[in-house]
View 1 (cartoon, rainbow, N blue to C red):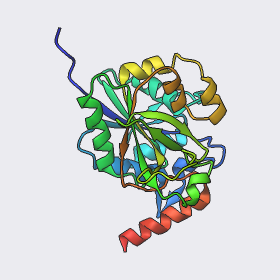
View 2 (cartoon, one colour):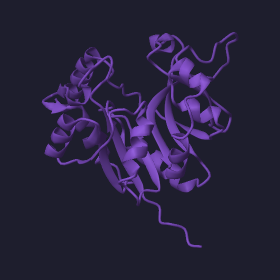
View 3 (cartoon, helix red, strand yellow):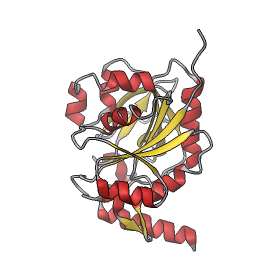
View 4 (cartoon, rainbow, N blue to C red):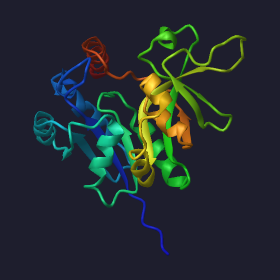
Length: 251
C-alpha cells in the first residue's frame, strides 16, 4: 500500500485568555501584534507546506487575516494548546505532521523550525520532537519556575521535564549542561490524535506541563539541541524586553 505524501503544517495556537497576560497575541511590539512577529518568522521556513494560526477569538482572527495569515477558529474551552491543534487539524486533512510554534516566540529561529520538521519527516516512528538550549549553571533561569528544564538520554530522547532545577548537581559533571526547554514541538498527526484522548496525567498535573503526559504514556520525544536562546513573552515586562531587542536588530 503506497504511503501518503508527507505534508508538514506549521500551526500557531493563539488564545486571548492568558492568565498572566490577557490579549497577549495582539500586544503591539514595534507597531505589530506579537503573533504577527511569530508568523513572519515562520514564513521564512522552507520545510513547512502550510502555515495557519489557530485561535478562539474573533479579535485575533480579524487581526491575523489583516496581515495575510490563514486562520482556523477553535473552541475557547481547550485546556491545552495541543487540544487546540487537534481541533485545527480537522480542517487540515492533508497534514501528516505538525510543527507547533507558540504564538509568543517572536524571535524563533526559522532554521530551528525547519530542523524539527525535517527530523519528523525522516523518522516515521518518532512521536514528537522538541528543542532545548544550554544554560550555564549559575544562570538565574535555572531556578526560575517559569523556565522549563529538560534532561535527556544519551541518544537525545527526553527523560523528564521540570520547573525545578534539573538535574540536581550533587556532583560536578564536566560537560553536562542545564537545558532550557523551548516551547516548540513537532508531532505526527496520529500521535496528536492519540494524545488528546488521554486524561491529564499525574506528573502533568503536578508540574503543569502537558509534555509530561506524553512521557507518562510512553511516547518518544527527540530533543534537538540549539544555540537559539531567544526568549518567549509571558509578561508585559518581557514584551518590553523583546521590543528593545527587535529595535536594536533594526538599527
